[in-house]
Length: 183
Image (cartoon, rainbow, N blue to C red; front, side):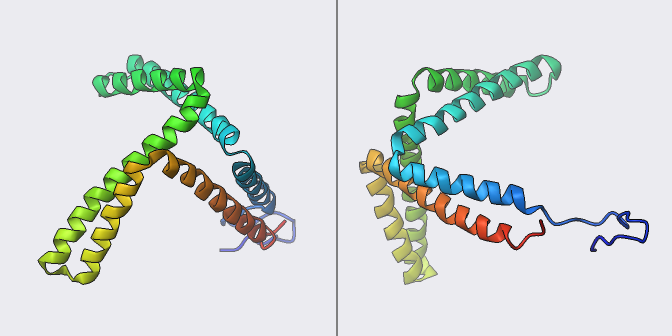
């Protein structure tokens, strides 16, 4: 349903309005800026983002701790989330440079292990009658997982560069889309 103005100048029936172009344009510009900064200064930019992540984890842990006293359901899980959030937040904020290297590296290892598991499942499925395509995808996934686990630091740097490229492409797309939206 489209909003139309009546003769009195008021909007008829509560229809959904399209988002304004300015927030989309601003987010697109910020994404391009962060993408370029990731390419030019990968470690300082990553350190800044990891610091924001540290503040988020710390704040989330504090909120979970407060919620623990307010609502009694799931006390064990809330306590675990609170302790882990506060601990992770404090550690990241105390050691932002180490965290900028460690967090993407751990993430690369997790993706590598996932690649091994998925690859094993696809390989078994491929040899059990699902077809050669599934078996080949399984073998490629295992190789990909082994590469990530063998070189997690290199994979982490690759992840940063991949995020930089995605930020630039997404930012340009948002900027272009913003000009299609109403002012």
